[in-house]
Image 1 (cartoon, one colour):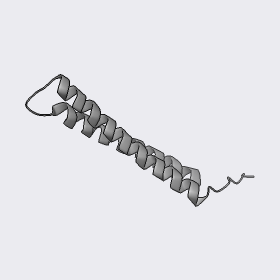
Image 2 (tube, one colour):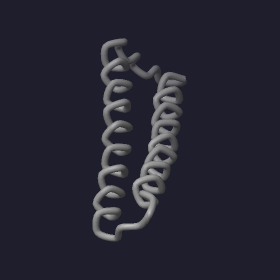
Image 3 (cartoon, helix red, strand yellow):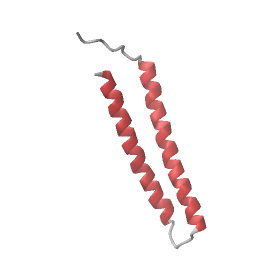
Length: 77
């Protein structure tokens, strides 16, 4: 016999997805901030640290978001 999992309420799902968006924003902000600090410490003709760390933070946050969304979807099954 299979045991039924309790269904999560829509409000809990909404809160989880909202938290994911805040986490994504914070990750990108921290990457850009760290890049800005490094560019101030090691100046060059372009803001390479800011560009690189911001792009890395975007890629990392997208990876984390996809993992969390997949986990939330698999919990519903």
